[in-house]
Amino acid sequence: MKYLFAFALILSVFSSTSVLAQESKTMTIKTRKNVSPEDVLYIIRSNSAEEFPVEHASLKTIDSDWIEAVDVLKDTSAVERYGDKGANGVVIITLKEDEAAANEFLKKLKESK
Image (cartoon, rainbow, N blue to C red; front, side, top):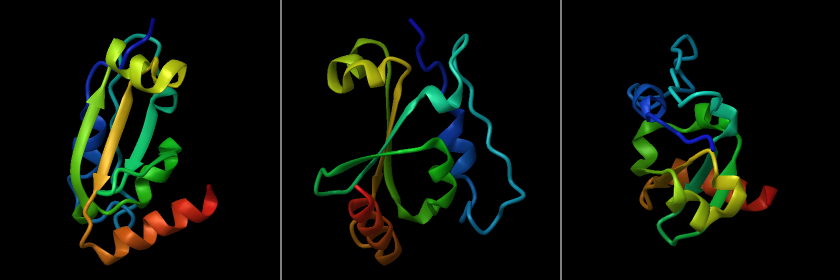
């Protein structure tokens, strides 16, 4: 099975103050073997524990100031929690509760569900 190997994505994506405002920045995602970044399951979580799966491309719209925590699940823990969708690894991004822009982003995710 394929598994997420390294987590350079979040470090490189969120090292700038605003990924959206700095489009010239590139992000590097390192994965094991034949796993592409698009194969990884990305979850945006609110502090109230609501979870929203998002596409890899959506990560560019998240401002690093909104992020409270980033967790990476791989191997059996990812599959146990998210089933086959988590077979290539799971990146869980928890957003801060007190960020108005982050709350607006979460609101849009809820509406698109």
